[in-house]
Length: 278
Ligand SMILES: NC(=O)c1ccc[n+]([C@@H]2O[C@H](COP(=O)([O-])OP(=O)(O)OC[C@H]3O[C@@H](n4cnc5c(N)ncnc54)[C@H](OP(=O)(O)O)[C@@H]3O)[C@@H](O)[C@H]2O)c1
Image 1 (cartoon, rainbow, N blue to C red):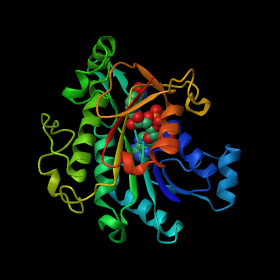
Image 2 (image 1 turned 45 degrees about the horizontal axis):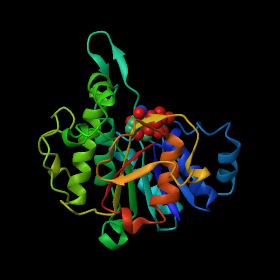
Image 3 (image 1 turned 90 degrees about the horizontal axis):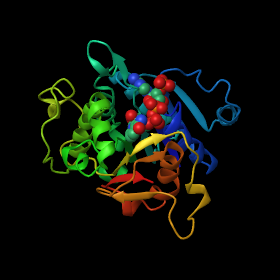
């Protein structure tokens, strides 16, 4: 298995990548800072073995993402089985504007760039690599209404900016997956008018080999998935569509879900949006 990972410098993208490497996969990482693994003995050994290749690039830059695809194809000797997209940004508190993202359309634009630069050899439906993209639970109005009350209030107060961006990413994913969009339009500052006609973007429904992962509030807790069920209860809930209850989930368990559950049972998850919560 050969994978192209965007957002793998840390957290979910990193934990999932390590799991994939431990299973024997090779990975091409698109990274803003290619020194990020300099002190990471595990990754260094994979780099030495040629299993890991690092490509410098920014997800918001079209040419960088294109170079990432090209390097991934070359590293995989012309094949690519998986793309993992976990790019995200931490919100900052601005005295004037409240909670803001340094790049308000970070995920939306990076995902558009990813779709726009798919190499020609990977465009036919039968040649498309599986794409796992991480957004968030509770970002569409319909999904927001299903959140536990306390989480609903917190999301509305604190996460407006990142969720505007994730909402744009969901819109782009729905387009490529051919899922009808029945929610309000995305803010034009996130997704400019006419985006559907951007050069290179697949036609509506032109890229369906996608799983959207929508975690609840993320923690740095341990991976419960590796321990297996406790008293017959699954360590976390992963549900296609909306889920009842559940406030948090750890980043390590999201990586566990992607690598240990979703990829081995891809037929069950392709085309779905999976909420993952405790
Ligand atoms: N926080 C929550 O409770 C929550 C809940 C649900 C979903 N999510 C979302 O889930 C996703 C994964 O979460 P996480 O905690 O693993 O994310 P994270 O720790 O914020 O990591 C995000 C990754 O994106 C990369 N990145 C940021 N800007 C980039 C750019 N312009 N070009 C290329 N890479 C860039 C970062 O690389 P650098 O090392 O270069 O910064 C990092 O590898 C994120 O989108 C996050 O917003 C978060």
